[in-house]
Image: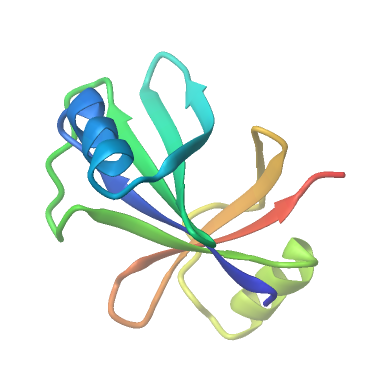
Length: 122
């Protein structure tokens, strides 16, 4: 793995959360994504990216806390997915998906935490 890519946090109010991260923590917006199901804003704090996730369907309440996932940027996502499958790690997707210039793949950690591998699409 090359680095911790980002931490995804489910938010109840995206505008309020964005105001907090920008004006209290001095984070800068680096990217945004929106579709009919979700609004996402990426902000940076130094070398750390925080992904603020607002579920438009009203499913913002999390059973296991507000941190949705931790993402790790990798050089070769298919290689990492094969390692997961060989070790019988619970995979949340059948194969990597393409999302906003990234290949992404979610899997479950040993304590049922949701983890993500992602690879930049060149």
